[in-house]
Amino acid sequence: MTWVLWRKLFRDVRLTLLAVALLLGLFQFLWARITERILSKLAPFFNMLAGFGGLSQQDVENVLFEGPGRVIRTLIGGDRVVLDSAMDLLSIGYVHPLMQILFCIWAIGRAAGAIAGELDRGTMELLLAQPLARSRLILAHFLLDLATIPLLCLSLWAGNWIGAWAISPIRVETPVLKPATASPEYLVEMGPFRVRVVDPLRKSGPPRTSEEDDRKMQERLRVEPMQFAPALILVAGLIFAVCGLTMWLSAAGRFRWRVLGWAVFLTLLQFLLNLLGQMWDAAAWVRPLTLFYYYQPQQVILGGGWYVTLSEWNGNQPLLNVPMPLVLFAVGLIGYLMALRTLVHRDIPSPI
Image 1 (spheres, rainbow, N blue to C red):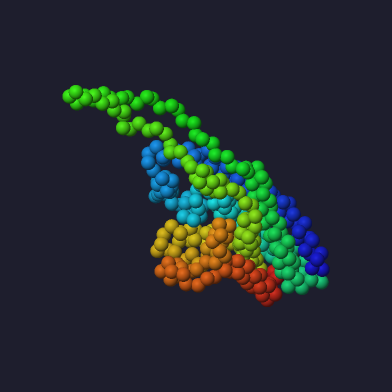
Image 2: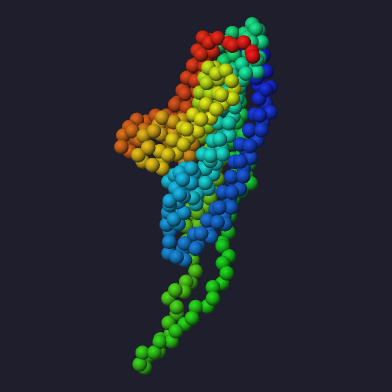
């Protein structure tokens, strides 16, 4: 009976699953094209202008991301992201707000209708009239997550591969600037001596790069889709965690719209608190209390490890190494167990 119910649930979500999977893959492909344009055209242009002014790349980034721009810097991954590296820019596609919104929309939308949706439609009584234990209903939804979440992750990864194929190798285009007007020359006479002086503001052009600089640049422009594979574990963990918590709300709720409202509110609150903690040091202590603190795929993609140190609770000093996947999957599993307990012990209201 569980298998029959699982097939029924999968048929119900198959079109939505296909749409979300296509959106995830398409966004990664489009982000790869954006990354190519930034690295091949925009970055060399700004670097050349900075070179004329005697500025470094870090000076330009400090100007771009000061004040309100700090919000953008926080959203794309903070100081760990180097804007002239292909892998760093591509990793933004995993923490982009649109991606996190899609993850949460899938998790909340599916889980909110799991129990509360059946009650709201008046079909729960018919479902439980079959020889089906309430625990089997939760088990069927759990198995549905085990099947659909990996498909979403694979669609995300497929977008990385297609995008990498489309943009590799990334070729830097030398900016074409309009020729500057001829700088005036001055004839300075000092008694019997005459000296011709060129305008001191005249620039001969950007500094030439050496072979070592070219090699380092090609290294920064290399795209390696295999490095995104480990981060898919965190993607799956975030979706599963949000889905588990929403399933608990759904098992305790009566109306689907009310469960949706509470789930969206709690998820958005966690996202904003995590963002606020990154921007304001006085509020950093609240970050480990949110799910999004444990969703740091850029750290995994760029070789930073699987752990968070809870330094926000210890004066910015490492306190404890906590595995991020362990927390995300544990939260999702606890949500399912609480949903099971709630559904088994609650009364099923009659359809209105």
